[in-house]
Length: 340
Image (cartoon, rainbow, N blue to C red):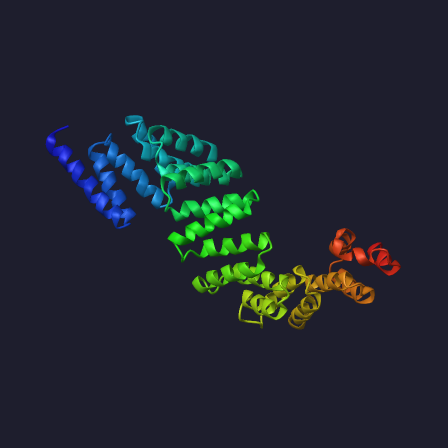
């Protein structure tokens, strides 16, 4: 290759790099492709092409570029690392692990490779191995809040809640505006029964994302656990859409209230559903479940019968197996209805 041709390929590589720095990956890709048209074995252009493709979500193509680059220079640690990321995005997790392991052979002090190795172990459900990788990542990069956050998640998955809380707290020292960290800190505090502290964490999360329904819901559960029912209801109301003229909003409200044992309130929500949609058999069945849990046999049977008249076979089978009816299962009227 002539010196002029080599300089031309380098020009397009550098132009592509500048575009990548601006996150203009489509145009960067065109520059890298031009460089490779000039020099098909241009290692740096192949690497950067793979990186751009990965950022565009084109992981299969990225993998091809990384493989070509590694065929030329197999000791390029960061390419093995990015290859692992591409494989992970394609749900080829075992291959991804192998790629991260090779990256770490060439660069054992790569905090990012340890971190993404931990992510991959988490994706495979092996949280103990994920924890070891995250711990190594944090050891190499103590201020990496993302690694501390994921370490906390993995520790929570294996029931090491106090350690998880410590990890979340350390992450928040470096990134105090991380919604996910505050939210999962609240979840973890709830797991260990620190409901008041959990509420504080959910409040912090909601300051960052005021419309985060899961945070409102779990805040409501925590309020309910400490007996603050009024505050719990206010949180649950925030969970649902503001448009209470939608029967689906009332239906979901009923499901939530029933789940935490607020049966009267759940029944009221299902009644609202039935105002909008009188033949909504799911609401009738769920009302029957609530009444059965209260031991109100007549009302349970009345609503179950109404649901069965609309969808007999489904609700006959469900009622036979549903533990919500255990309190009235021996009642002759219930037995007669589900055996009809």
